[in-house]
Image 1 (tube, helix red, strand yellow):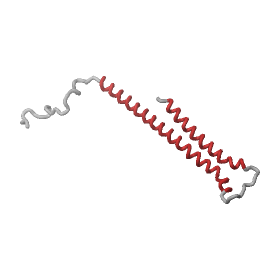
Image 2 (tube, helix red, strand yellow; image 1 turned 90 degrees about the vertical axis):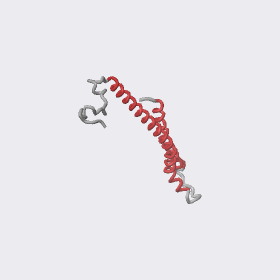
Image 3 (cartoon, helix red, strand yellow; image 1 turned 180 degrees about the vertical axis):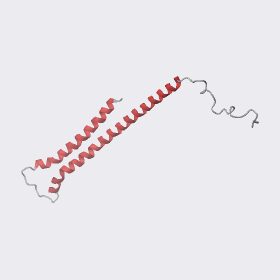
Image 4 (cartoon, rainbow, N blue to C red; image 1 turned 135 degrees about the vertical axis):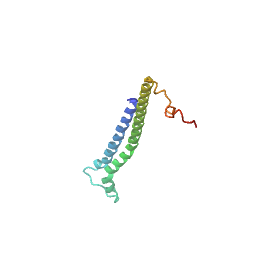
Length: 128
């Protein structure tokens, strides 16, 4: 409805978050591409494990970096949806108020006091 710039900014944040995930995952594959056709040097026992785990680590780092963008985008969307809902409720109340104000009382029944019990009480009964 309104605030298109903020909605487009929230969409941009989601795209930016996914770009972080994809970029860091591709960077995780970089050690694999660097050692193509070469043997992995065995300088330590953790070297080959780090090489094999690098895509998963890149995906994890990318997801953690993108998480902030996803959360911020979601918060913006929730606030904008809440604002639109409150605006819709306010418009509905204004419409109902206009309908009530334009309605004319018929036969004076609506002007009668709802707590007036003089018609129920008999004329010969004493007052309290």
